[in-house]
Length: 89
Image (cartoon, rainbow, N blue to C red; front, side, top):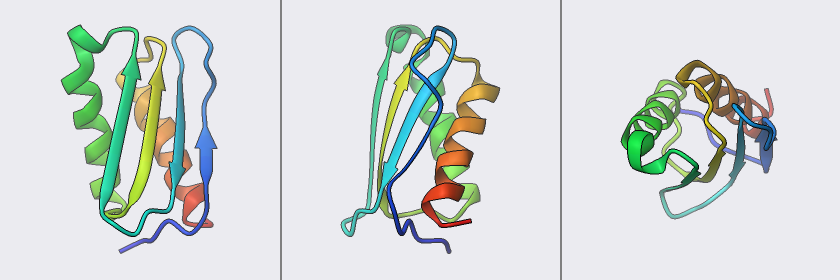
């Protein structure tokens, strides 16, 4: 299991990108998603985020996702980058 030891970010707020912010949290996992395509793809975005967190064994932390229409592969890459930075890797 990996712990988030510091605040980390990845991505931008440009069109077709996603900005991910991750910080330590002692009381479980908090995920907040703000997306321009929330109605159509909100559940898919949440699914990708949870999958990446699970793959890295993250069960504590606060993750904020600000999506501007990014593809799943971009969301996956940004979340993974934030996780690795947050774990100090």
